Image (cartoon, rainbow, N blue to C red):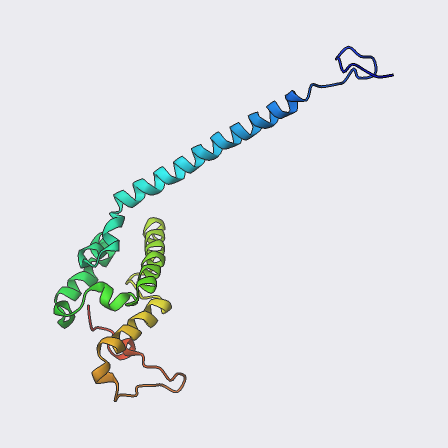
Length: 173
């Protein structure tokens, strides 16, 4: 028996017109899209406000005053202003790599760690340099003072690299 595909057919009582599943799927996708857009808006809005409030754009500059946006660094900033490095180097000259990608990678990771530590108040006092940042600092010491360090071979038994900060920890600030 050939059915004329009408809803009253005895063989196809549970027949659902093909447009209804498509409508439910469209509604589901619409709701999912609206919820996703709302969540994205909340994240982008919160992130944008935090970036604005924390003066995030200042960290992209080479201005040492950006480092004192956070009051925890003020002692180091004051020490730098009174040091011999004040006339020759900014914070970025010592604390970030000199190549473009390395510079902004370190700035981004430091920004994340600094903001997390400051927000959660779980930083060590007095403030201490992390091992990766210490390596960057040592490379920059050797880079700037190559004429002095080329003849010096400071090395302890465990490593063959110089660790400038081990002996000169008060230099800079």
